Image 1 (cartoon, rainbow, N blue to C red):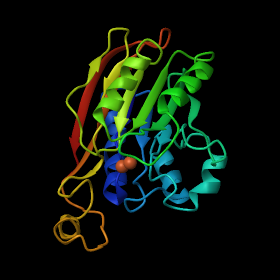
Image 2 (image 1 turned 90 degrees about the horizontal axis):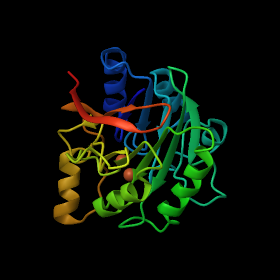
Image 3 (image 1 turned 180 degrees about the horizontal axis):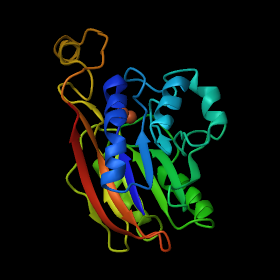
Image 4 (image 1 turned 60 degrees about the horizontal axis):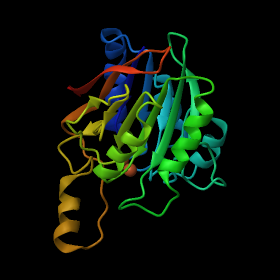
Length: 260
Ligand SMILES: [Fe+2]
Ligand SMILES: [Fe+2]
């Protein structure tokens, strides 16, 4: 089966990128399952129920999140009720929502998706290694097709998680930095890997935000509000071919599509 995963969807430009390209991408690459990291979908910060509904209606099967998951308070209830939107699995057990889900692909196969955040250069959380391992053990009883979104800052932590999970999951895909890396590959035991999927949003920006206010903050250290930028919109991520019987990935290809 063919799985499409895209990196951090930022604001209205990011959502527009999905709306304007997905039906064509689905046809061209016969996409069976679509995962989108949407932690920045609502004006750059978090997601609202209305925006999540809109993204699901565009054809996204599972929404993963990250450190911005709680930025919009309306999501607390929504995430409790909607199992195909995930918060990091290594967040406190008492937090609303879940860190993994098993959904069904368009070609009728079960796909497990797990979301976790890193510990390095990020807010204190439980180990993503332990949390993901626990989720994998549970999901593997139902399906060999398992995709992990590791939302983390440090390249080392993401690569280490890749080696930790090779042979047990279909893919480990990094998000959070908003910069696509060129290290996509298949690990020795058949797991697809990339350190970062990149951003789905405006590239004439600093990680999706307007350049001027970010420059002002860096040069003066005065507080300033970062609006979402608008120009040079791209959709970025990877396409993965996975054998639904073994869960092994045969191929991973980076994609970057310009949105007019
Ligand atoms: Fe992000
Ligand atoms: Fe993030």
